[in-house]
Image (cartoon, rainbow, N blue to C red; front, side, top):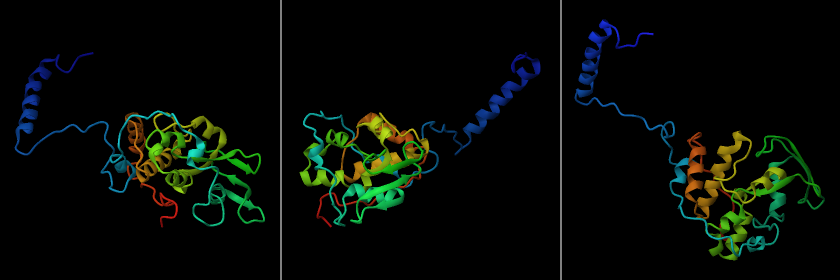
Length: 242
């Protein structure tokens, strides 16, 4: 095969082509700049989850020493004072075909379809449930990134804040453990932007820090959905603060 510069005609045209390009580059106001390969497509809106990652403090993970689940309160509380515990509130809000006990609070059955973590269908039956209420930002992860210095009231608010809670397949939730974005993402790729945006919102609301690897992982996911809004709402960060 003949290369571009091997024929006499090509050798005559090559200098002209180079000179023409050089002349174009030399024109006043004419610049050619390389687009960085790692940037998000289009402008990043001020209210997006991607933009909010910029404001997260980056620090190393603190020791897990001293962590106990009870440091965040024992069981599910009624922090919104509606008469029902947080677990039943989340189940009622996120399951379909919900049936309740005669007390009007206790959820006895329902269907999670689709399960956000796997994309599958999971049936909830009280007492033999395959549905967990997961903390988007795990309690142990929060403990190692600022929560160990909080008041007991703030830790209880965090553990019961609907902004940080999602009904999910129990097997997937247990595989997650106390992982952050850098170590675990939902197998259901369609949910990853929602999942990571939720973690950013929780960490921002409660002023928790992130590791460098965690922030990089958050940014990587959210660059695929740069317009994803940062979730808001949930309960006050201190119970009783309305």
